Length: 48
Image 1 (cartoon, rainbow, N blue to C red):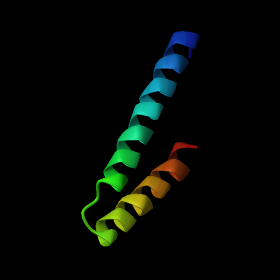
Image 2 (image 1 turned 90 degrees about the vertical axis):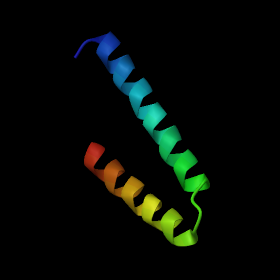
Image 3 (image 1 turned 60 degrees about the vertical axis):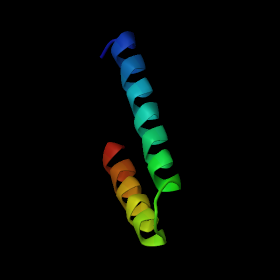
């Protein structure tokens, strides 16, 4: 993977992380917030 591709991947990951954080902050119920947190944690473990 070249440098430009790594940079694009890092930016895409940052955008995704911000979108998930925004969704968690805007969740209408605590149950939805908890579910989004669980999904986000599951994705982090699969990305590494």
